[in-house]
Length: 103
Image (tube, rainbow, N blue to C red; front, side, top):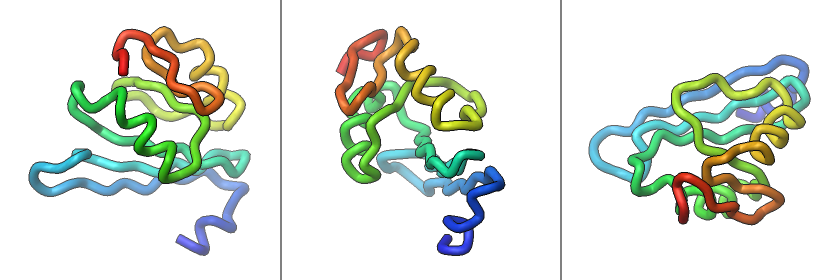
């Protein structure tokens, strides 16, 4: 992990798969071309909204959005733009903005 933190010029992803019942079925870290990190979780629908506050608290995140089976953006700027434009529940500037999956 330490080596990967210093390889900021190349995007990469790390995946973890859960075994058995738990909070998340899958967790992902995506490192973007511009040295940002995107955290992804596969969660049941009833845990989506609350996950923003949980995850952002752990990683110090200020932006997040709900999506399904799509590749993450390649840059932080693109990620922030998607969060701001999302009509679903999103984390924008550290605040949960209600949408289709109200928290």
